[in-house]
Image (tube, rainbow, N blue to C red; front, side, top):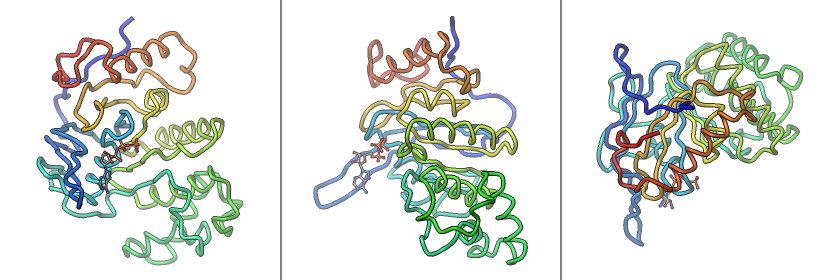
Length: 276
Ligand SMILES: Nc1ncnc2c1ncn2[C@@H]1O[C@H](COP(=O)(O)OP(=O)(O)OP(=O)(O)O)[C@@H](O)[C@H]1O
């Protein structure tokens, strides 16, 4: 049984997102905190690329750096060959928190908002595009509701519709389902996978759940504990939500666990030397 393989950079297409030797640091009164060290990876169009690692290994910081909210202390991040220096509508984000939606806007107004604020579309077309995505995430019935009247899962669907309506080059998701109950979380993973099947958007997804990484991702970057370094890069396209109970899935989860928690690999080992 060898379901996981170290991914070699495929020949052919150029990566959409190129992260090279990125070290991220936070400077404060108490000194400098290094969040990641020399992290590199490539994301290709249509990838569901997952950053997986223990709490504090710098996953969110990497996502913020791709989002343009944090500048690397060293290394570079390029999207479509251009260095990322600031946030932009080509990178829409969905976060864990339910309060990411302005509460004074209805579902429809929330989804329309970035389209109008960035002047992407005139109002009538923005409305049409928003209604389309609201329908795609199954919220047509509540399009005129305010966020406080929605469940956590519904709020996350609004955030996903709002992000995808912008047709970003890459959708950034930071533990988007972590605050949901287990059943809703599973439903949301299913819906995200279905949306991806229909649209083939490019996804950069942060989680610390091994199971979630395996079902959501087609490629997984494993990061070592603080400060995060690349421990391994894996293919996981063979798994989906129906794989959950299979021996192959359980075996893969166990092997990732062993890699993450260092049963047989020192944290500083170069990723390509890891035998899976
Ligand atoms: N704004 C900040 N100022 C100072 N240090 C920070 C800041 N944000 C994150 N850090 C530190 O950087 C490191 C990485 O944090 P980050 O949130 O990126 O990790 P993470 O892997 O996403 O963790 P978690 O899974 O717990 O969310 C941690 O040591 C954290 O304390």
